[in-house]
Amino acid sequence: FSHPEKIFSASVQELTAIPGIGKTTASAIRKFESWNQVDHIFDFTEGTDAWLMTLEDEDYPRRLRHIYDPPVLLWGLGRKEALSGPGMAVIGTRKPSVYGRDKARSFSTELCRAGLSVVSGLAYGIDTIAHTAALEAEGKTIAVLGSGIDRIYPSANRRLASRIIDEGGAVISEFPPGSKPDRENFPVRNRVVSGLSRGVLVVESDISGGSMITAYAALDQGREVFAIPYDISIRSGRGCNTLIKKGHAKLTMDINDILEELNLDTKTPNKAISQRSLFGEDQADDSPKKDADETGGTRAWRNAENLTEIHRSICKELESGVLHIDDLAEKTGKPGHLLLGSLLELELLNLVEAMSGKRFRLR
Image 1 (tube, helix red, strand yellow):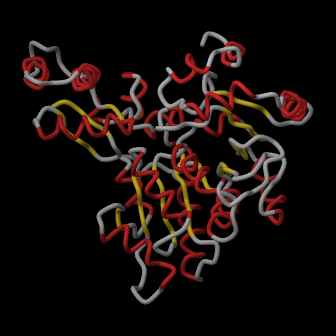
Image 2 (cartoon, rainbow, N blue to C red; image 1 turned 90 degrees about the vertical axis):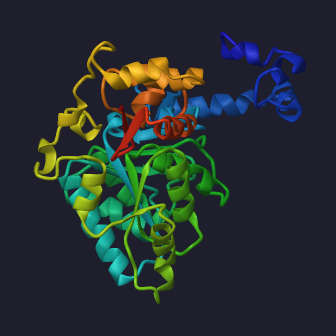
């Protein structure tokens, strides 16, 4: 529809013709009359320091835009720019061990010193420690809420949320102002935590819970997952060990394990790392490919049979050089989770090579 207003005047037949819209949703749209609530939400947003960002806005975070189901709206407090910088999610249990607390603090500190922001959920435990350590390291941190932007949860972290906002970070939510921190909101918000990030570090987690949901959301989104190993007798670390055992996460012993996997410059101190290099650019092996006449890999894909339109679109974009999965998603207009399957097929055909940090190039 060319304008949102036209959605509400459309017929049920027109609405159900749209992929993903069934009769129940179409009927709910047709019967919607809660405009007073809509006005209240806009009035609240305009009457406070909160900002509202839509999926179509230019400053909507590039990484988040290309996940399978990005939030259509984001409310926030603090700096919008913080959402687009290179970040790492640091997540874990609400009741960490002494070991987990120490690792959350040290890794968050080192990530900030390496020039990345720390993304987490403002929950008790690992999340709180990660945010706090980032601020103490004079880094940026982003908190993703499972409630409305006007309902900081847990309430004990209101002061921490204020520090995040005051010191250049952001507190955001896809839930409208007034939304309570209902249990079902938190699994939903976890995909935003991973979607904003280059990768996810699971500091301490049992085999179930929000941290594991976030880890598997990250895998679906094409993000790197890292996990700190635990003594097998420690129940609260079983999730980390399970991720490592199944090959779903990289065993992480120090900050270099993360920086090397993401192809970051581990020798560059703190904020001297450029944002371009953090996004996988400015690397020695990222030089543009040669022309089709000079490069066997380019000729190979052009002459290959049974390639789909997506295959050819990927290869065409990779002619310019090494690209991260998010860059490919932006250039091809396809979500990252769809591209990963096609990239695997191209790897098996020996046409594309996968590199560290979810980056790809033509062979």
